[in-house]
View 1 (cartoon, one colour):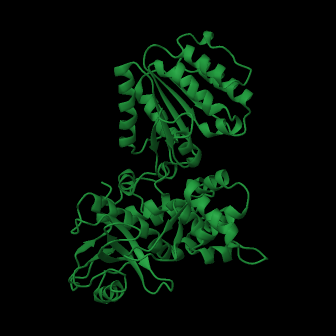
View 2 (tube, rainbow, N blue to C red):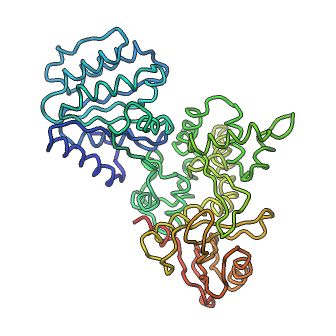
View 3 (cartoon, rainbow, N blue to C red):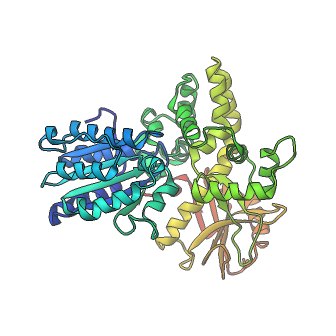
Amino acid sequence: MSAVPFIGRRRELAALTKRLDRVRRTGAGSAMAIRGRRQVGKSRLVQEFCDKAEVPYLFFTATKGMSPVEAVEAFCAELKESCLPTDPEQVVHVTSGSWPEGFRVLHSAIPQTPSIVVVDEMPWLAEQDDLFDGALQTAWDRLLSAKPVLLLLLGSDLHMMERLTAYDRPFYGRADTMALDPLDPAETAGALGLTGGDAIDAYLASGGLPGILRAWPHGTPPLEFIRQECEDPASALFGVPESVLLAEFPSPDQARRVLEAVGSGDRTHAAVAATAGGREGPLQSGSLSPLLRRLTDEKRVLAMDEPLSVQPGKPALYRIRDHNLRMYLGVLRAAAEHSHRGRPDLAFGLVRRRWASLRGRAVEPIVRQALGMAAAAGELPWPDAEAVGGWWNRRFSPEVDLVGADRAPVARRVLFAGSIKWLGTPFDGHDLAALRRDAVQVPGFDAEAGGLVVVSLSGVHPSVEGVGLAWDADDVVAAWG
């Protein structure tokens, strides 16, 4: 067992245990494809599961760029060294680079008792061998599924992992799927022993990534943790997001420039085009639009928000999906540069100056998601609310932080409008007057019938009346609990 503490993931461990129990009960094989971004903890989750399962297992990790010959040889060598085969000396060494042969060797090594086979970073195998998916499907149908084995296929390339089980692919219908996200705000709060605004700030800084949370001393407030990490140039707070960038965007190409433009605060198509362009001027729409679609739909590194009301609205706004990467591009990367030069004081001073404004924008999608989950659970005063977003016009005057409606992106009914105040002072009468003034400009909002929602870091002033729902930071965290 690893000495490094394992954090959270009770639901995911339960899902894996359920499938192993099915293998035990039926004596037949079961497969699951697990996808998630790098550093989200896929390998650690599955290793923890294997350690707890107390059955023989093989854990094979592919290497990017390895040829099929090298990959099959490495697979067989790992199989022989694992606890899976009853007689390791019977494991044949395959030198042909043939995955059908490799899978036949695996089949002969799987015992007649329940076992686990893990193939980590599986997309790297398919990347080097176009026949890998077909070979896996044939081996599963004819050989492996008849054995009492749980096959776990892991991958960080989200698009390729989704394609693995798509209807037009060989492995369609043969594997359950699990999308592994970072730890949520409630799990982050529990792991660190933090509450309220500190828990939300810790989630923004860490992104819920286990590799950062394991380095975070229990009960340490976020800014104090960041101050300590600024004294360590090799800190996981800086190293984890940088490793993600280098793995997914190794060269400073247009995609990387677009990502960094969004990370620096550009939200609209036009602003991103201007920042990501070069001497020739802004990026042309014919180049930028496909890049934004790829980064949003395939790479899943960007998210696109659309204004929510009873009318179609523009413009769409882009943001970094992962919170740690968003904070890294927004300020932590610049802080890391100071830290590398031996100036932790400058590094932390930069973070402290930018932190309030950065988190004020970054917390918006967290609050919307929390309200959306509360709506789905029937815990809001508006039973018909099924979608929570925001609203803005082309001039961004006004921007309404919260809009609740019966559907998205074009609603039939707008049920509430609201404001997020993530500052050190309570939501007061001046804030309420501004919310009332702005809410009536949301198409479909009825000032007489529609409700008002306030989510405030520092609570609501006693003089504020007429608000249908008022949340603080603990309420936001509790939505995940």
